[in-house]
Image 1 (tube, rainbow, N blue to C red):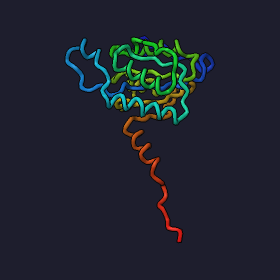
Image 2: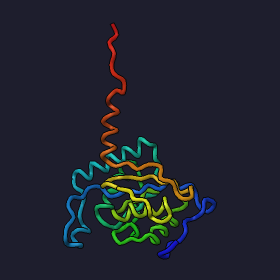
Image 3: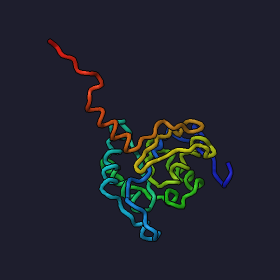
Image 4: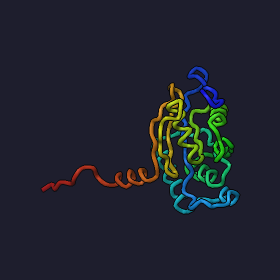
Length: 191
């Protein structure tokens, strides 16, 4: 495993973790000044994305035991909004491994720290989120996976390699919710 990456715990060493990787929701246009950009907050669309994605998780009966976030404001707000909508009452934990400069070895250390939990939601940024996801499911990062703002991927960590179960973004979720209200069958007349 090059680059100092440590192997993930074997199935015998860990519980059956369902890992949910989420890219922070929409925080508008990035700023040129890194100090100002780090403090960038979610815009209304981003807050709406958080509520929508929390509804998706609720409708899928996802149980979250711990939420871990990047220290940047937009990711922390995403984690807090989603947690609130899910009824998560514990404090969102902060992990620099999920920040803009996080690396895969630090990400693996974070996973090992929370290995006893079944439902772990981590909130971070691109390109880290899709790179971490790619490395998890291929072992070498060979998977090119697009994660739009607000996207959530479910990864079963008890498989070797870990298995991507699904990836849902807010656009897809809106389409699904819009279609649920419509009947899939054409109405027929009963005369």
